[in-house]
Length: 219
Ligand code: ADP
Ligand code: AMP
Image (cartoon, rainbow, N blue to C red; front, side, top):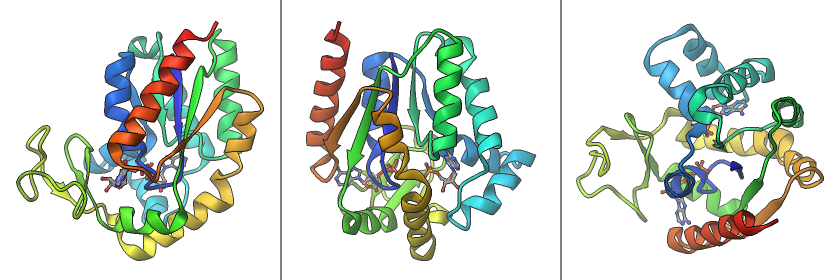
């Protein structure tokens, strides 16, 4: 299955991704994670992306789309993929759907995580992230067992530079200005299930599991 996880920054996409990829046995392709990996490895792409990420803006469409279509063409993604944080503009959506259709594939399911805007700021400013595996924590609601150490891989858990309050506001504005319109675009072309992302992590997980099960049993 080719599944898209859609929602504003802080909606819980990364949090739900782990269980989804385990269930579907497909790779997790999160464009933000890919940029952070490049940043850590100090590649040219990492330096380019940092300029946009620090301001809460989007990396240009051509750059992101080339990255994603290269990734989709890799053998481990041939049976399906979980895309997280992509597409973020209508133009990215058009390029993605064109690529799938040229390769005899389609988006089987869009999971849209919907969360009240006032919750997003609290989620993002309290978020802590593992530098190595990217797992998300929250200082209040889901801290790691040992402060600063990832439960999954032992990596260092830190605050992302772009989770500071000024950048959070700008990212949410960018979402409203450029990304919100992607949902109606996708709704006209792919099966979309809207989920209440304001509920607990476990309850959102149960909604996600039910939506996937239903999509898998659809004719
Ligand atoms: P996204 O990948 O959509 O930007 P994350 O999955 O990283 O968002 O989640 C953002 C923050 O919100 C993290 O600190 C995470 O622990 C927390 N979080 C995620 N889902 C929930 C939830 N259902 N209830 C409460 N907090 C959540
Ligand atoms: P995320 O980890 O999804 O919150 O993404 C972090 C940052 O990476 C975003 O604020 C953007 O600057 C950049 N980014 C991630 N995905 C995309 C995308 N699909 N298009 C443009 N920029 C992106």
